[in-house]
Image (cartoon, rainbow, N blue to C red; front, side, top):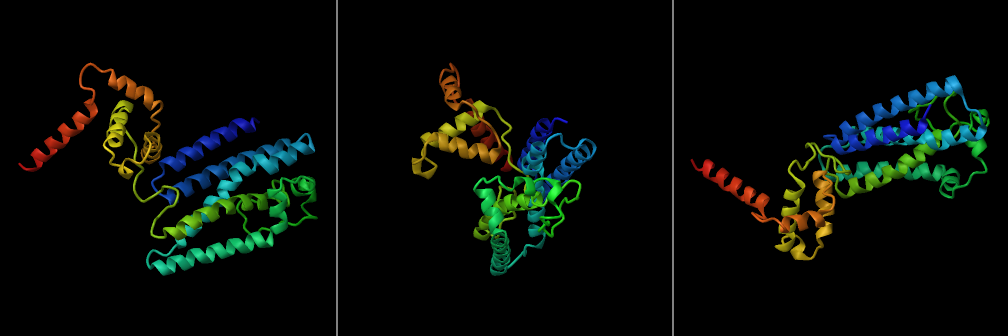
Length: 275
Protein backbone atom coordinates (compact mmCIF):
# COMPACT_ATOMS: atom_id res chain seq x y z
CA UNK A 1 0.00 0.00 0.00
CA UNK A 2 1.22 3.46 -0.90
CA UNK A 3 0.67 5.23 2.42
CA UNK A 4 2.17 8.46 1.11
CA UNK A 5 -0.28 8.71 -1.78
CA UNK A 6 -3.25 8.01 0.49
CA UNK A 7 -2.08 10.59 3.01
CA UNK A 8 -1.61 13.23 0.31
CA UNK A 9 -5.14 12.60 -0.93
CA UNK A 10 -6.46 12.75 2.64
CA UNK A 11 -4.73 16.08 3.35
CA UNK A 12 -6.21 17.55 0.18
CA UNK A 13 -9.68 16.35 1.16
CA UNK A 14 -9.37 17.82 4.66
CA UNK A 15 -8.19 21.15 3.28
CA UNK A 16 -11.11 21.28 0.84
CA UNK A 17 -13.59 20.40 3.57
CA UNK A 18 -12.21 23.10 5.87
CA UNK A 19 -12.48 25.71 3.13
CA UNK A 20 -15.90 24.79 1.77
CA UNK A 21 -17.94 23.73 4.81
CA UNK A 22 -20.87 25.93 5.75
CA UNK A 23 -20.30 25.59 9.50
CA UNK A 24 -17.80 24.21 11.98
CA UNK A 25 -20.13 21.32 12.82
CA UNK A 26 -20.53 20.44 9.16
CA UNK A 27 -16.75 20.54 8.78
CA UNK A 28 -16.19 18.41 11.89
CA UNK A 29 -18.69 15.75 10.82
CA UNK A 30 -17.16 15.41 7.35
CA UNK A 31 -13.57 15.23 8.58
CA UNK A 32 -14.46 12.71 11.29
CA UNK A 33 -16.00 10.42 8.67
CA UNK A 34 -13.07 10.88 6.28
CA UNK A 35 -10.53 10.21 9.04
CA UNK A 36 -12.28 7.07 10.22
CA UNK A 37 -12.39 5.74 6.67
CA UNK A 38 -8.65 6.25 6.26
CA UNK A 39 -7.91 4.59 9.59
CA UNK A 40 -10.11 1.64 8.65
CA UNK A 41 -8.17 1.28 5.40
CA UNK A 42 -4.88 1.36 7.30
CA UNK A 43 -6.15 -1.13 9.85
CA UNK A 44 -7.16 -3.68 7.22
CA UNK A 45 -3.78 -3.38 5.54
CA UNK A 46 -1.83 -3.77 8.80
CA UNK A 47 -3.88 -6.79 9.86
CA UNK A 48 -3.31 -8.44 6.50
CA UNK A 49 0.32 -7.54 5.84
CA UNK A 50 1.85 -6.45 9.15
CA UNK A 51 5.30 -4.79 9.13
CA UNK A 52 8.55 -6.21 7.79
CA UNK A 53 10.75 -4.29 10.23
CA UNK A 54 10.28 -2.89 13.72
CA UNK A 55 11.36 0.53 12.49
CA UNK A 56 8.52 0.44 9.98
CA UNK A 57 6.03 -0.28 12.75
CA UNK A 58 7.38 2.54 14.90
CA UNK A 59 7.23 5.00 12.00
CA UNK A 60 3.67 4.00 11.14
CA UNK A 61 2.22 4.41 14.64
CA UNK A 62 4.31 7.46 15.48
CA UNK A 63 3.87 9.32 12.18
CA UNK A 64 1.62 7.86 9.47
CA UNK A 65 -1.31 6.91 11.67
CA UNK A 66 -1.17 10.26 13.45
CA UNK A 67 -2.05 12.18 10.28
CA UNK A 68 -5.70 11.04 10.23
CA UNK A 69 -5.86 10.27 13.97
CA UNK A 70 -5.09 13.80 15.20
CA UNK A 71 -7.83 15.48 13.11
CA UNK A 72 -10.24 12.74 14.17
CA UNK A 73 -9.63 13.52 17.84
CA UNK A 74 -9.49 17.29 17.30
CA UNK A 75 -12.75 17.53 15.38
CA UNK A 76 -14.47 15.02 17.67
CA UNK A 77 -13.64 17.33 20.57
CA UNK A 78 -14.78 20.41 18.66
CA UNK A 79 -18.06 18.77 17.68
CA UNK A 80 -18.72 17.78 21.28
CA UNK A 81 -17.79 21.26 22.49
CA UNK A 82 -19.94 23.12 19.97
CA UNK A 83 -22.99 20.92 20.55
CA UNK A 84 -22.82 21.67 24.29
CA UNK A 85 -21.78 25.33 23.98
CA UNK A 86 -24.34 27.65 25.64
CA UNK A 87 -26.33 29.58 23.05
CA UNK A 88 -26.99 32.64 25.23
CA UNK A 89 -25.51 34.56 28.17
CA UNK A 90 -21.96 35.79 27.68
CA UNK A 91 -20.82 34.93 31.21
CA UNK A 92 -22.18 31.40 30.95
CA UNK A 93 -20.30 30.95 27.68
CA UNK A 94 -17.07 32.21 29.26
CA UNK A 95 -17.48 29.79 32.18
CA UNK A 96 -18.06 26.91 29.77
CA UNK A 97 -14.91 27.69 27.80
CA UNK A 98 -12.94 28.19 31.01
CA UNK A 99 -14.01 24.79 32.33
CA UNK A 100 -12.85 23.12 29.13
CA UNK A 101 -9.51 24.93 29.33
CA UNK A 102 -8.98 23.76 32.89
CA UNK A 103 -9.70 20.18 31.81
CA UNK A 104 -7.05 20.49 29.12
CA UNK A 105 -4.57 21.87 31.65
CA UNK A 106 -5.18 18.82 33.85
CA UNK A 107 -4.58 16.57 30.84
CA UNK A 108 -1.19 18.11 30.11
CA UNK A 109 -0.20 18.11 33.77
CA UNK A 110 -1.18 14.45 34.16
CA UNK A 111 0.83 13.48 31.05
CA UNK A 112 3.71 15.88 31.64
CA UNK A 113 6.47 13.28 31.21
CA UNK A 114 5.14 12.04 27.90
CA UNK A 115 4.50 15.58 26.63
CA UNK A 116 8.12 16.49 27.39
CA UNK A 117 9.26 13.30 25.65
CA UNK A 118 7.35 14.35 22.53
CA UNK A 119 8.24 18.05 22.63
CA UNK A 120 11.93 17.33 23.07
CA UNK A 121 11.97 14.93 20.14
CA UNK A 122 13.20 12.01 22.23
CA UNK A 123 13.24 8.48 20.80
CA UNK A 124 14.70 6.15 23.45
CA UNK A 125 11.27 4.77 24.43
CA UNK A 126 9.87 4.58 20.90
CA UNK A 127 10.09 0.79 20.85
CA UNK A 128 7.92 0.57 23.97
CA UNK A 129 5.60 3.41 23.00
CA UNK A 130 4.98 2.71 19.31
CA UNK A 131 5.03 -1.05 18.85
CA UNK A 132 2.25 -3.42 19.85
CA UNK A 133 4.56 -5.85 21.67
CA UNK A 134 4.64 -3.70 24.80
CA UNK A 135 0.97 -2.81 25.08
CA UNK A 136 0.53 -5.05 28.15
CA UNK A 137 3.50 -3.45 29.94
CA UNK A 138 2.70 0.19 29.16
CA UNK A 139 -1.03 0.36 29.65
CA UNK A 140 -3.18 2.64 27.52
CA UNK A 141 -3.91 5.75 29.58
CA UNK A 142 -6.68 7.28 27.47
CA UNK A 143 -10.29 6.56 28.35
CA UNK A 144 -11.58 8.03 25.09
CA UNK A 145 -12.01 5.30 22.51
CA UNK A 146 -11.92 7.31 19.30
CA UNK A 147 -10.32 4.51 17.31
CA UNK A 148 -8.73 1.91 19.51
CA UNK A 149 -8.05 -1.72 18.70
CA UNK A 150 -5.40 -3.94 20.34
CA UNK A 151 -4.26 -5.13 16.91
CA UNK A 152 -4.06 -1.57 15.61
CA UNK A 153 -2.90 0.39 18.64
CA UNK A 154 0.18 0.76 20.79
CA UNK A 155 0.48 1.92 24.36
CA UNK A 156 1.02 5.57 23.40
CA UNK A 157 -0.09 6.19 19.80
CA UNK A 158 -3.53 7.33 20.96
CA UNK A 159 -2.01 9.52 23.64
CA UNK A 160 0.30 11.08 21.07
CA UNK A 161 -2.73 11.91 18.94
CA UNK A 162 -4.49 13.46 21.93
CA UNK A 163 -1.47 15.59 22.78
CA UNK A 164 -1.31 16.95 19.23
CA UNK A 165 -5.08 17.47 19.00
CA UNK A 166 -5.34 19.12 22.41
CA UNK A 167 -2.61 21.61 21.54
CA UNK A 168 -4.72 22.70 18.58
CA UNK A 169 -7.84 22.66 20.73
CA UNK A 170 -6.26 25.12 23.18
CA UNK A 171 -5.78 27.62 20.35
CA UNK A 172 -9.39 27.09 19.26
CA UNK A 173 -10.71 27.66 22.78
CA UNK A 174 -8.55 30.73 23.35
CA UNK A 175 -10.16 32.35 20.33
CA UNK A 176 -13.57 31.10 21.47
CA UNK A 177 -13.01 32.76 24.82
CA UNK A 178 -12.16 36.04 23.12
CA UNK A 179 -15.21 35.86 20.84
CA UNK A 180 -17.75 33.55 22.49
CA UNK A 181 -20.62 34.88 20.38
CA UNK A 182 -19.17 33.42 17.21
CA UNK A 183 -20.20 30.05 15.88
CA UNK A 184 -16.67 29.41 14.72
CA UNK A 185 -13.12 30.44 15.27
CA UNK A 186 -11.50 29.10 12.16
CA UNK A 187 -13.45 31.22 9.73
CA UNK A 188 -16.57 29.06 9.78
CA UNK A 189 -20.00 30.52 10.32
CA UNK A 190 -23.60 29.56 9.76
CA UNK A 191 -23.33 31.30 6.37
CA UNK A 192 -21.87 29.86 3.22
CA UNK A 193 -18.24 30.87 2.58
CA UNK A 194 -17.64 33.81 0.26
CA UNK A 195 -15.96 33.04 -3.06
CA UNK A 196 -14.78 35.40 -5.74
CA UNK A 197 -16.42 34.36 -9.02
CA UNK A 198 -15.31 37.20 -11.29
CA UNK A 199 -11.96 37.56 -13.07
CA UNK A 200 -8.49 38.14 -11.67
CA UNK A 201 -8.27 41.42 -13.53
CA UNK A 202 -11.53 42.57 -11.99
CA UNK A 203 -10.31 41.82 -8.49
CA UNK A 204 -7.01 43.53 -9.24
CA UNK A 205 -8.82 46.68 -10.39
CA UNK A 206 -10.88 46.69 -7.21
CA UNK A 207 -7.89 46.18 -4.91
CA UNK A 208 -5.81 48.89 -6.54
CA UNK A 209 -8.80 51.27 -6.41
CA UNK A 210 -9.19 50.63 -2.68
CA UNK A 211 -5.48 51.11 -2.13
CA UNK A 212 -4.96 54.29 -4.12
CA UNK A 213 -8.04 55.92 -2.58
CA UNK A 214 -6.71 55.14 0.92
CA UNK A 215 -10.01 53.69 2.14
CA UNK A 216 -8.42 50.89 4.20
CA UNK A 217 -6.55 51.84 7.38
CA UNK A 218 -6.46 55.42 6.08
CA UNK A 219 -3.99 54.26 3.45
CA UNK A 220 -1.50 52.96 6.00
CA UNK A 221 -1.34 49.49 4.52
CA UNK A 222 0.64 47.93 1.70
CA UNK A 223 -1.24 46.61 -1.28
CA UNK A 224 0.15 43.10 -0.75
CA UNK A 225 -1.49 43.07 2.70
CA UNK A 226 -4.85 43.95 1.19
CA UNK A 227 -4.38 41.20 -1.37
CA UNK A 228 -3.46 38.63 1.29
CA UNK A 229 -6.47 39.49 3.45
CA UNK A 230 -9.00 39.50 0.64
CA UNK A 231 -7.71 36.22 -0.76
CA UNK A 232 -8.50 34.54 2.55
CA UNK A 233 -11.97 36.08 2.82
CA UNK A 234 -13.08 35.26 -0.72
CA UNK A 235 -11.06 32.04 -1.10
CA UNK A 236 -9.29 33.11 -4.28
CA UNK A 237 -5.67 32.96 -5.38
CA UNK A 238 -4.97 36.17 -7.28
CA UNK A 239 -1.51 35.10 -8.37
CA UNK A 240 0.92 37.70 -9.68
CA UNK A 241 -1.21 40.80 -9.18
CA UNK A 242 1.67 43.13 -10.05
CA UNK A 243 1.80 41.60 -13.52
CA UNK A 244 -1.98 41.76 -13.86
CA UNK A 245 -1.92 45.44 -12.89
CA UNK A 246 0.76 46.09 -15.49
CA UNK A 247 -1.43 44.47 -18.14
CA UNK A 248 -4.39 46.57 -17.04
CA UNK A 249 -2.36 49.75 -17.39
CA UNK A 250 -1.39 48.79 -20.94
CA UNK A 251 -5.00 48.59 -22.09
CA UNK A 252 -5.88 50.89 -24.97
CA UNK A 253 -9.56 51.18 -24.06
CA UNK A 254 -11.29 51.32 -20.67
CA UNK A 255 -8.50 50.60 -18.23
CA UNK A 256 -11.09 50.40 -15.42
CA UNK A 257 -13.61 48.18 -17.23
CA UNK A 258 -14.55 46.15 -14.16
CA UNK A 259 -15.04 49.22 -11.96
CA UNK A 260 -17.06 50.88 -14.74
CA UNK A 261 -19.26 47.78 -14.96
CA UNK A 262 -19.76 47.84 -11.19
CA UNK A 263 -20.79 51.48 -11.30
CA UNK A 264 -23.16 50.91 -14.23
CA UNK A 265 -24.71 47.90 -12.51
CA UNK A 266 -25.31 49.84 -9.30
CA UNK A 267 -26.90 52.77 -11.14
CA UNK A 268 -29.18 50.38 -13.01
CA UNK A 269 -30.20 48.72 -9.74
CA UNK A 270 -30.97 52.12 -8.20
CA UNK A 271 -33.03 53.19 -11.19
CA UNK A 272 -34.99 49.93 -11.21
CA UNK A 273 -35.72 50.14 -7.49
CA UNK A 274 -37.25 53.61 -7.96
CA UNK A 275 -39.75 52.47 -10.57
